[in-house]
Image 1 (spheres, rainbow, N blue to C red):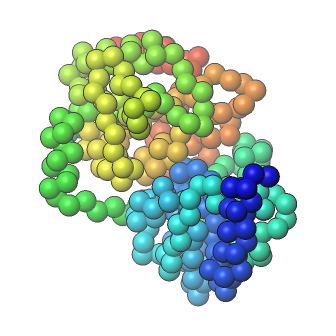
Image 2 (cartoon, rainbow, N blue to C red):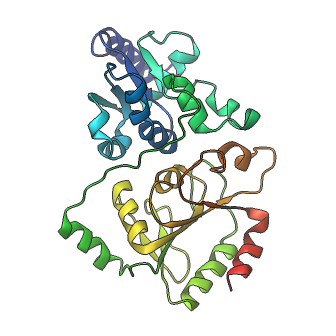
Amino acid sequence: MSVKNFLYELYVKILFRTKYKKQEFFLCSRGIGDTVVFLSKLHDYKTWYPKNAIHLILQENHRIIAEGYKKYIDSEHYEKGNVIGIMDRLANQKMLPRNIHFILPPDGEQLLGYKDLSICDLVNISMGIPDTALTYEQPQFSWKPDRKEEIIKQYHLLEGKTVILAPYAVSVPLISKDLWNQLVEHYHKKGFQVLTNVKDNSEYPLDGTEGISLRLDEMYLATEYGGYFVGLRSGLCDLLAYSKCCMTVVYPANKSKDWRDKYTFSNMFFEKKIEEISEEDFALWIQSLK
């Protein structure tokens, strides 16, 4: 073990014995999608366990998501990703204190898709919520009026006629840009403002589009205002599933990974219809739009 990792592990063990000693905590050590599904179930948790306080340990980059569910949270504590990673490793070694609870089982990814188990099912199990609780509470974000107008002007958003495309994702492989470019051409012909979601300088807008880079809560605002979103399956999709935008999710072609079986929205019972397309059918779907 490197000196750096040793020091981080020592730091985490000290946290367990001091800061995280006296209360029950939920550890949000997974991706953005898992965290937002967990947060949307806090209202059910409070219904079943009204006397239980909710104390969270989250990654720093999940802070803005938690802001949307503040009314349910008694306290939140933010740690860097490498600290959260060590907590994960200690859990696999059965060294995690009993007062620290995962929002998903440590082997959650392996369980996804087994007998149609969804992320929501696993979250319910972790929280002790009956599987009949099928409701999800959308985040209650708030934006200053001047910031909303600034976003609309900056990206030339057309209300109800803007599509945000998300061809990049961390959790799944990318698919052919030729297909995305065909989609860009279709929306341009329909008079849409077409934007590409880019997180940093390593990602580039699709040909003929402008890049859009916003905090998660502001992306939520932009998609609701613009009305349309098409993207690779990612944690962003989980967040936007709560929004009012028309949403299409694309799954890469890799049967060995069973992306669609594991991460489908079809067994999560959201109020709105989320269209789900496999990469093999993406071109045909684009053609059907014309």
